[in-house]
Every structure is written in structure tokens, then in C-alpha cells.
Image (cartoon, rainbow over all chains, first blue to last red):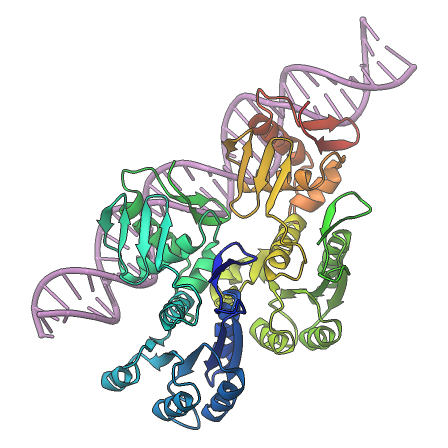
Length: 245
Length: 245
DNA sequence: CAGGATTCTCAGGTTATTCACAGGTAGCCG
DNA sequence: CGGCTACCTGTGAATAACCTGAGAATCCTG
């Protein structure tokens, strides 16, 4: 089931119409807070836990529709927590947070089911998108909502990562894709450079704010080239996307 | 829920009909006073706090619907205060006040949820508009009031920053946009040049008072050009906007 | 480990916007 | 009708915001 949220975007709901419930498990409270803010803004109900034991307890009580789980916890390791989680809620999809250099095969083992993972440092756009994907596929969200975004003749498929305009396929890099997805999830709405930076770049990005301008420039070259422009600058305010013409 | 205030404008109320409660946190008392006056005029109930500790205490007691928070406080830094605020009231939207050159720095993550920020020196119009936006999207204000203002055939969309008259799109600069928004929020009401200056220009503006005349002139050229005029001069008193004819 | 793709910094270039200044115009009062 | 005042607006300079080319650094892939 889809509904229109206060901020005008569509959001996922549970089959009974209540909000989706998500549990965030991370011992770094700053990160947990950052995540819960972002997920609440998606319209989801969020609880946090700081260690494995608390995670298990909260799972039992809250019965979340999805779990975001840091694999490195102070009291027990990822596999153990996962095992106990599964004892409580066998079907719950899990999104793992892991360090970049974590051993590949162990992650592969963890994500054997329908689960997914993102590496730290991540961007909020990435986490939210993955979580939406998990919820969509798990059936916790009532309607099998489409994974395709469209604005005018511009089409973006979140599953296949394919983008096309007027039927013509366009190749984007990972960052370009995330930026475009963020714009397309908020069509006709001005997004400031700070908002974009906070959402599309990872939380530890310390660079120049003009990367946003740079990537907007890249996107225009690929998406607007020749055609009627869809990405617009609102000087002093930010950028927005809307159908050409 | 919307209601009509004594001064004839529409204002946001909480779901139970009581006034929206806002907490202003800033150690410069002159600024805090300026802000609270402006926000009270919007019909909101305002409390101020001069440092982080007081902010936390007041939050606990007042349970505000929104917080305006200076990121530079004498006793603790913005992120810390934010964390504690969130522990008290996880859902409360926050509008950050930050120095112009700090933007790149440590704003990272601040706008992650629905939050927003404005840079100092700001204009009151900007702060109020952002705060209204936050309240609108957070659902604290009962009515999901639209982000669109209309006076006659003149339409202004606060989300997309688009303005049109009789369906025809009009491009405005940032200052023109704020001036027009202020006029349109107060239709049929005379606004003096001093009021406009105080509201639309930032509080440290030191220039000639005739910028207002200049920008009114710009607006007329773009909005009234050819058509029946909507922006009227009341000699010796100020300006007002009302539907043409 | 080479080659290519990608991300990002830096800096110069371009355009839009803001604002001061000053001369012009129109309302108002006697 | 003359003069005073308030308001209007053309011109142009300074500035701010944005765009983009070139290339260094990094990551990824075979």
C-alpha cells in the first residue's frame, strides 16, 4: 500500500495501513541517531538498540518489519545476533552495516537470504534505498510498489539501476545515479546543496561543497544534452528536477 | 488546522487547536528577542533558551513542536545539543542557525531528517518560511496546508519556488521571491517600507532604504507588466498586493 | 599490476544578482 | 499652478553564485 506523506512523497505502509516498523542496531549513538532521523522522515517508525542483547529484546517486543544491523557490536558478533533475531522473527529482512574492508565471504554468508548490506561510510540515500528494496521484496509493505521512478520521459529503475530518457539508455556512475534518484524522488521541489550533500554523500564526507555543482554538471551533460532541460538551478536556493517543456 | 488570526492572516495550529509551540535557542539575546517577536507575530507560542543545558530543560518541560537552534552555543556544540534534544523528543523538527562560512564544515548530517538550516545573517522572512515548512511537513500543524499561495491569478509555490500569473511562468530572483512571498502572505494589507526592510532583508542590512522601492519596481515589471496591476502604492504608508481589477 | 573508470580538488571563466546613485515623474498641498 | 516630497527607474559597478575544464588521486577489474 502506498500513501501520500505530509511532504508530498509516497511512502510505504504495512498491509494493515500502520507505519512500517524498523529497528536500528548500532553502538555508535551518533550514527544510530542519524539513521533514525532519516528513516523517520521516510514515514517509518524507528527504534534503536545499542548492543546485541538490547536488539534481541526490542525485536521480541516491537516485531519490526526490517532491521538495520551493524555487524560489529560490543557484546556479540553479527552472526550470533542474526541467529537470535531469526529465532524471534524468521522472516525479517536485515540490512547489514559493515566496514569497507570486512571479509567478503562472511558478508556473503550473512546476506545469503533476502538480506542486503551497505559498507561504512554510507550515504543516507543508499541506506534508505536498500531498505525500501528489502521491504518491497519481503512483502511487509502491502503493495508490491514499483521500483521505477519516472519524471517526464526520464525513467530510473531502482532495481536494475537502469536509466533512460525518451527510451534511450543512459550510463551513470554510482554517485550520479544516487544524485539523480534523490532528485527524482523529489520532483518539482527545490533541494539545497546542503540537503543534497547530506543525503547523497556519505556522512563523513569532508570535501568541498562544490562537488554538488560538479555532479549536477555531469548529470546535465548526460541527461539534458541537446534535449529540453529537466534539471534546473534556482540561484541562491538549490536545484530541482521537473519534466522538460 | 488553519485559523484566521486577529491580524487577518491564516496561521497554523496544533491538532488539538492550541497554538504551535516553538523553542528558540541562541546565546545572543538580541537575536533571540528578534526571532521570538517575529514568531509570536505568526501566532506561535515562543520560549527562548540561552545555552544548551537550558534548551534541554525547556524542551523537557515545554515539549515544543519545533526548535530553532544556533549551532554555536557557549556550553556545548550543535551536534551534542541535537542528540540530547532527540532523546527528549525524537520527532521534533529543528531549524539550525549557522554562520555563513561554517556551512561547509560541520553541517554534515544536520539536515538528514526533515531538518533544515539558515545561515546568519538571515532575514526573518526566510526563518519563518523555513519554520512553516518544517511544521507543515512534520505534521505538528494539524492541517497539511498547501505550500502554494495564491492571490487572484498570481500563484507562488514555496516548494518549487515557482511563480506564475494567469498560468504563465515568471522567473524571480531570490530577493524578489521573498518580497513577493511576504506581500502575498499579507494580501490587501498595507506594509510599510520599514516593515518590508525588517522582514525581507537580513538583520544586518546597512544599505539605502530605497532598495525596497527598487525591488517593488522589479516585481511590477515582472508581475504587472501589461496586465491589470496587483501591486499598489499607498503614498506615505507603504505597499499592498491585491487581485487585479 | 596495468588500464580504465570514477571521484574529487582546484582555479579560472561566466552569468546573474544585488545595490548605489542620480535624474525623472507623479501626487499633494497651499 | 508652483513647489515640495515621495516614489520610480535607468545605468552601471561590485559581488556572489554557479559552471566547467584539466588533472591528481583513488578505486576497481581483469
